[in-house]
Image (cartoon, rainbow, N blue to C red; front, side, top):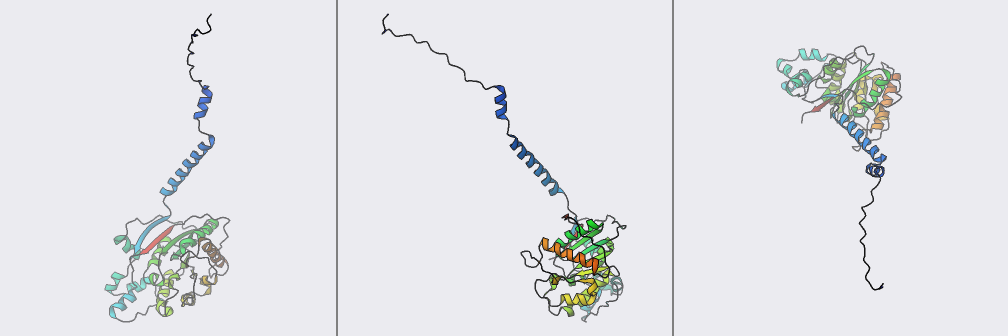
Length: 316
């Protein structure tokens, strides 16, 4: 045989690609367990976020408040004379003795607002009159954090509470209308806590100009036990603490300016934790030093729950 003879090359048939076992192929498409955990966590987070975003809080209504003058002040302004308030007369008696034009000025604040300036329904659900203690915490923006801590005490001691916050208010606002009397009638508290005065630290001649307002505020409370919580001074005041103390006495006045506070960025409002400590001191005072003491057992935990709150805002 001739070695130079060209050999015939037989083509090798092309082999198909190797197939993976079905079990291995299925396993490669499956996500790792940790990714499923992340997806479940994301789903739960979105569900909770949607629930709390859509869930209404306990701030049942908010409205703008038009100033309602006391009849004696309105009548004096109309006649050009100085008003001399009768500190012993209740608000209803003062209203009945006012002249006809003044009666149009003096009115139940909330009723007028509901009729003319209010777009949300009032909460008219009956309160639990059987509860031994029903607090009304009413005043200015200092109640923002105080209300949460007071609610801790109410939950721990089986009490009820309502809170009213009138942003930017002072004794002048509360002392020239019947807003306080309205919420006393509405919520029927057995104990009133006032937090009014933080917006009046630097008023000149405050005792001269604010005394009638303080008297009218006290008159609206009547014989209901109350404590006036003084402002948390961040600077020396011009007499607001002295003014209130002189009218209510040390057994119905908690002097907050003696405490130390950590402040928010505005330099005035206590931080949440500092406000909680503030409420702890107030609770201790209510238990031991108030004219009408009330049991305030320290709560074992912080529920961090906003109580039933009414927001008042002044018309600009």
